[in-house]
Amino acid sequence: MSEFQTIHFAAVDKPLDDKQLAYMEQQSSRAEVSRWQFEVEYHYSDFRGNAVEMMHRGYDVHFHYANFGIRKLMFRLPTGLPVDAKTFKRYAMEYCLEWKKDSRGKGGVLSIQPESDAGSNCEDYFEFNQITAMLPKIRDGLIAGDARLLYLGWLVCNWDEEAVEPPVPAGLKKLPPELQEFVAFHELDVDLLAAAASASPARSKQSDSQLSFDDWLKKQNATALRGLMRRVLDGDAAAVRAESLADIREHSGATTWPVAEGTRTLAELRELASGKATTRRKREETAQQRQREKRLEELRGDPASAIKEAEKLVDTRSTDNYCKAAKILAELRDAMPGETGSKRADRAAKRLAKKYPTLSCLKRAFKTEGLNYK
Image (cartoon, rainbow, N blue to C red; front, side, top):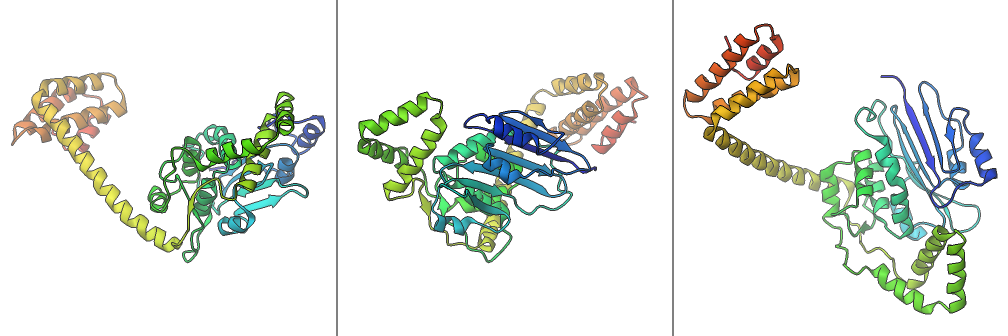
């Protein structure tokens, strides 16, 4: 497997101006650069641009994957994190989950980059456009006060078994599609996530943030609201929303996203995950057994249709379909009592082998399923 990297930046709130665009174009001679996006792939080469500075200078989200151990996401948050600085320290991990504050103002860049093993390749099966398409939605959640990404980031980055978990945000039991994509991209163990979510509070139908919106709006005078509306009409809607949400969080006297106090170590979470994995496997095995019994009952009721289905599959002259046909005949054998099933399945296999004497792949499929085709 050759070395492979793919790098993506995108502006979300507004396009780059001429000065910002000129800076981005200097970062790579091979990239496709526009006012909205920056895309480049490398094979046996490297990106030498300043990714953090590119975020400070106009792009809002960043994705970097390399098959030698890089899975990095960055989000520019113009009004700061969804939690206060003291709380964020409990989620943060040096080099892996970091907040790089702007030199002025409240904004900065959130970076998530877990340690990954070289050779952990996902480009063969993962559609990168799925995760890159979700980055603006993940960022939007952070701006709105959703702290779940911070906890998920801690889970994917942490290797210290004795580390105590940070505050557990509400809503981990039911993640939105964009956070599900984050989980999939980082291959977070589903049982570990379920273990963590067991302490996650339920989200109320009318969120605390909605109540805060109403209270905040009542306190705004007409002049302030007109100023906000003018900025919206001038094309600055994203910044108005971000600033308003940050102001609500600051003046509400409470976090906009409910959390439970974190008390479990990573080792305890892994132990709980092991138990959940055992329960899940038993549940899946039971479901598979019920499904198999239903399938065998159908075959017992209409064996002729099963044989016709196998014959049609073989007629397609496809190796995959040979395996499917052999499996159908094997299921028919198992469905019928005594030697009746074996005789009927073997007769069908012999008939097909005789009809297609040169199809060695078909015969191999029959042999794998234990069918006597000779």
